[in-house]
Image (tube, rainbow, N blue to C red):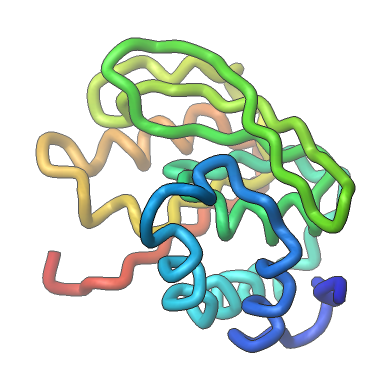
Length: 167
């Protein structure tokens, strides 16, 4: 089953789609359960993205991508997807996601969004997603907004979501 990304998506569609994905950390305890629990949240985010009507070739950055459930959905929607995750030292790696035998090799920048200069080119992204990361930023939450603003193209979008309004 392929998710029709330009139509309304629901949690059941996402769960069915994610069952066809082989994740990098799939063998870690709780990863599949995590995706099942968060499938409805993935659907809400995708429905917001569908309203933006972004082209398939949009240059997209997903912050805090691991454990890659939302990433699998985005990789099904966008051809130019870059990932970012936390690390104490700047580094670059690649993440492989397999969906029904089709493997996507995605570049992943690892850095601290609150403390490091983001190792990404200025004005190079059409869309930056920060899904469920803001509530984890304790030192300088505004740094994520400054970093996204620097790398977004004019007219680009910064989509922020959080599961916990009390954080």
